[in-house]
Amino acid sequence: MRSAPFLSTLGLVSLLALAGCESTSSRQSGPGPAAVQAVPLPTYTPSGDYLQGTLRLGAAPFLAPYLTELSTTFKRLHWGAYTDLLLPANIAGEFLAGKVTVAVNTRPLSDSEKLAFTERFNGPPLEFRIGQEPVDVFVHPSNPVATLTPEQVSSIFGLGRSAAGTWGQVGASGGWAGFPINPVAPAPGGEITRAFQWAALGGGPFNPRVMFTDSSNQVVRRVEQDPGAIGIGNARLAGGAIKAIGLQLRGQRFAIFPTRENLMSGIYPYRSFYYLYVNPRSRPMDPLVREFTRLALSQEGANALGRTGAFPLDGAAARQGLAELAAFDRF
Image (tube, rainbow, N blue to C red; front, side, top):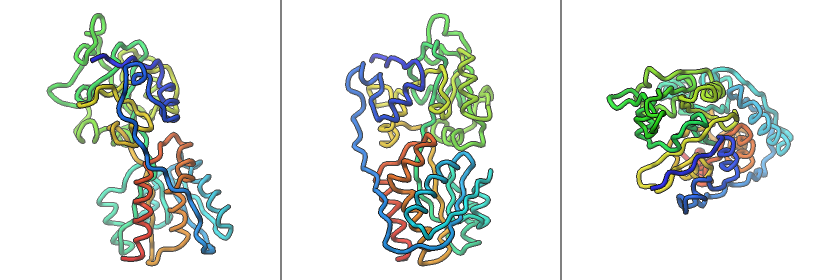
């Protein structure tokens, strides 16, 4: 089996991913994984109801452009509607306190948070996945390693008897064989790191050798400066001289990169989701809440979220969310 030739920068991988193209590895090495025919996202069509009132919306600060754009579209289509935007550091806490009716977050509510919500509002919140982003794996451009298996990734970042400490233990040869591996990750409290921990380490602890930084941008900067480093994070918007690592999955002939198709099909295993939470408050649901949620689950909503660097979900997932929304008042 030939190793897939690496890409010089993750920025190029990102452009390919956003354009929905094949990676360079699949073009040069023969047919890659079968292309996924994604179900198209539904287009938003406003209901015929006249909407009037104010909707309280909340999101983490970095999602302000997304929520602002979606609000602008919503008010343009429903000129009797108004929105109040709240951008707290702890959006989950504001939602649980009832200060916002619709909340967007990059982590799911915990079971205890959902229970607390149910006890306070006499029913559970409605949860919808509205987008996703890959957890990229990348190294310094000079590193000869181009692909890793999930087991090797786990041995680098995880804590266990098979923990890898040198690049020779994961396939490098020559002068690189004894070169130490320096793993880097965003802060452990963030959703990207949490999602990677569950997907790559089975929820187990990180290796004490992992260096944690405040953000994915700082991980990229560290990997740029350290030839022995390997980083995880959302590096597509950070740019920089780094090299994407492909995953050699069991049963796949070619390395898997975090392209749009591989993410939407579920082939690429390291990803985190964007969630939209709704406080229905009453049955039937407030028409303002229902219509804004319909917009968020549409192609227009996906376009707005894409400007944050996120990928859309497959249209089938959006349509399932719309079906759950429509079914709410019937039960």
